[in-house]
Structure formats: C-alpha cells, structure tokens
Image (tube, rainbow, N blue to C red; front, top):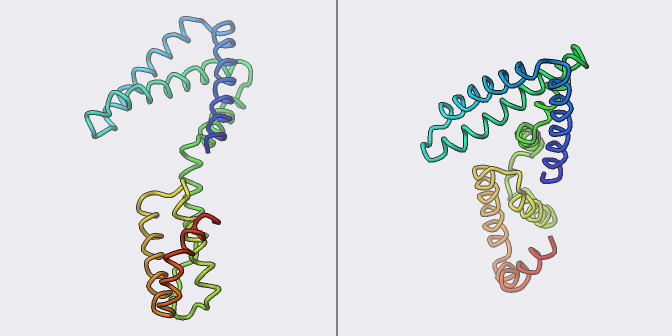
Amino acid sequence: MRTYRAWWTAMTVTVTGFAVVVGWTVESPWLLLAEVAMLGTMGAAFGITWEDDPARRRGAAVTWAIRAVLLALLLTGLPPVMGAWSLLVVVGLVLLAPELVLVLARQVRKRREAAPVEHPTLGEDDLARRWRSTTIAVQSTWRTPAEVLIVVQERQRLLDEIDRRDPEGFSRWLTGGAAHDAQDH
C-alpha cells in the first residue's frame, strides 16, 4: 500500500502543479488565491467539526484544509485547458485515493472469504491448510482489529479441534512444530 500511496501522491502533485501553473497564467492569480483561501478555510472548518476527539481536531483541520486547497487548485487550473475532462480527472483522483482503495479492498476481501466451516467435517489436510491461511490472514495489514479478532477466534476453534483429534501430536506440534510452521508461512 505504501507504493500505491506514493504513486497516487506523485500523480496528484503532478496534476495539481500543472493546474497551478495554468490557473496562475490563464486565470487571474487573484481568483486562484481567493478560491484557495475560501476552500482551505471551509476544509479546515469541516475537519474541526467532523473530528469528535478534541486532541485530534487540529490535525483533522490541517488535513481537510490541504485536501480542499488541492481541490480548489484543480478546479481552477484544469478547466481552462481540459474543459469538461477536468471533472473526470478530479473524480478519478478522488476515487483512486488510497483511503478509498483500502476500504474497497477490505469489502472485496470480506466477500471473498468463505464462512467458517464446522471443523469436525474437515480432514487433516484441510485443517492444516485452514491453519496456514488464517496465519496469513492474521499477519495481513489490510484487516481491521475486529476482522483480526474474528480470525483469531477461528484459529482458537482450529486449535481446539486439532487438540481433540490428536492430543499427543498436538503437544509435540506445540513444542516444536508450531514455531517452525509459523516461520515457513
């Protein structure tokens, strides 16, 4: 996600830089400054009112002010050169924003995951495969704490089922094999 965020930021800065140059030369510099000041102020006010935690309000105000200023620059500088296509560029940048892509990826991942299966119906290989897939799922940085908790609860049921089927093998696995298995995957 870091690479994607860097790519998106570079694209946004490039397009905004182009919009600033066009806005400054083609449109009135005063119009550009007025729009930046107006939308920046509105963005800061939005950030302050949106954030419930008083300790985080200043950061939210700055973040939303920057976003509003970027939007003002894009909406002022792009239309003289690109016309109606500028709207498509702005909408594209917004829809490809890393935060929205992350939310979409989480939604897709939730829909793809199979519902937990009753473990007594799983064979030994299926249990092992399920254990490895949940190991990867717990280590994923895309998951929310609530999603990780669900996976951890699934792992608990898997361990209980493995222990129920083969207590001695489970004991051996815990003392040596589990650590090795976790390193492999």
